[in-house]
Image (tube, rainbow, N blue to C red; front, side, top):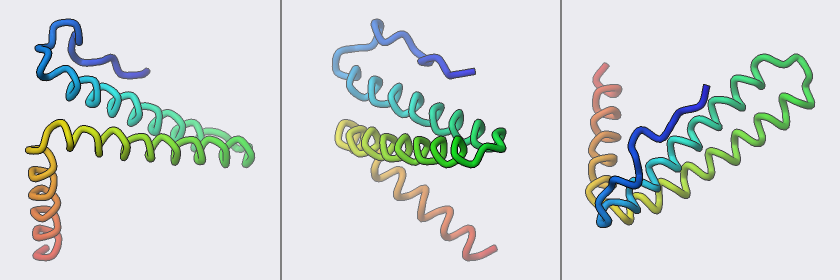
Length: 95
């Protein structure tokens, strides 16, 4: 059900370990968001649904925290993400 870290962190070069740790954290947080939102869809108990969606929102905040740290560790990433955002906006504007 939940993702496994796609690489063996013990085999990563020292200069890349922080980036890979942060990427693994992002994977875990996205998995948590998916899990809680899927469970919220399954339940008919409004209290449980409300709490699950609140927890999912907290996990999304964690995504932002990991993303911010990853952009500091991998400066190229921030520029690439901005370019990707601009590309999507341009495609959607024209379509």
